[in-house]
Structures are given as C-alpha cells and as structure tokens.
Length: 177
Image 1 (tube, rainbow, N blue to C red):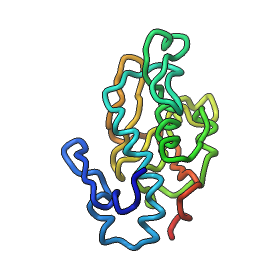
Image 2 (cartoon, rainbow, N blue to C red; image 1 turned 45 degrees about the horizontal axis):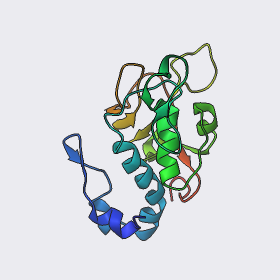
Image 3 (cartoon, one colour; image 1 turned 30 degrees about the vertical axis):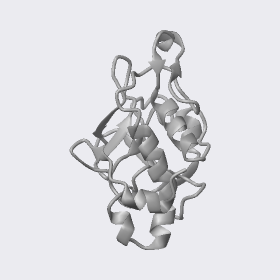
C-alpha cells in the first residue's frame, strides 16, 4: 500500500492538471499529510475508474459490477458504488447507499473541503436526503458516476443542488485542524 511519502512524490495527471496535494504534500505539515492520506488514496482509486460505464446499482467494494434493473446488463458503477469502492481501497468502510455514506463521517463546511471528501447532491427535493455522491478532486471538481449512459468522469461540483460535504472519519483529522 502506498505510504504518505509515496503520496507526496507521485504526480498523476488529472484532466489537464496535477492531482491536488500530490506535489504540495511534500512541503506541508505532517498532520495535514496524515489527515489527507485516506482521502487521497480513495480519490486515486476513483480516478483510476474514469471511463468505466455507469450501471444503476452496480459496483462496490470489489470494483465494477453488474447492477440491477436498468443496470443489470452493464458492468460498472453507480455513484454510491464508486464511492464505496474508492473508500474500501483506502481501508475505510462507508456503506453502500448515498444515505449510509452521508452518515459515514463528519460533515464539514465547503470551504474546508479536501481532495477525496465526499460531496453530496439533493436533486429530488421531494425525497429527503442525498441522491448523488462524488469524490472531490479539488474545490471545483469531482469524480463521479453521473447517470445511465454516461461514464465515470470529472465534472464541476459547483451545482445548485449541492447538499454538503462529508469527510469519512477513519484516518482523517477533525475539520479545521
């Protein structure tokens, strides 16, 4: 498994840039590097899945899988399956559904968002709770499995239906520390 030193030295390309925190971790405070390690591992796992098809109900801790209903013939991920897979790779169970994942850690203010934090969206105001989740790439972008017919990709996280940000607890520091 990659250590914090490995995270500091790697610099994978991400959509025309460098994965946030990769180059900057070398000069940052040790507590910040330790706090970010779990999220960075999860983010890298999700980024490795770019291009995998969306499959409703698909994917989980073992990777892409056949979904249910309209996802039954497609091997891939839905949004929560991608998040579950990414955090499983980082050794942190977060649950299977967006509702479980919404409760999997500490809710933090948007201005304290770090790479790998879970970003949740409420695109159906008639149903309480989040309907969509992605992993923050930086303060402007997320990697997610968007919808049927699409592929795992990076998109803006600046959407009017942003519900909140959750930092899964295991291996992460307290907000603002």
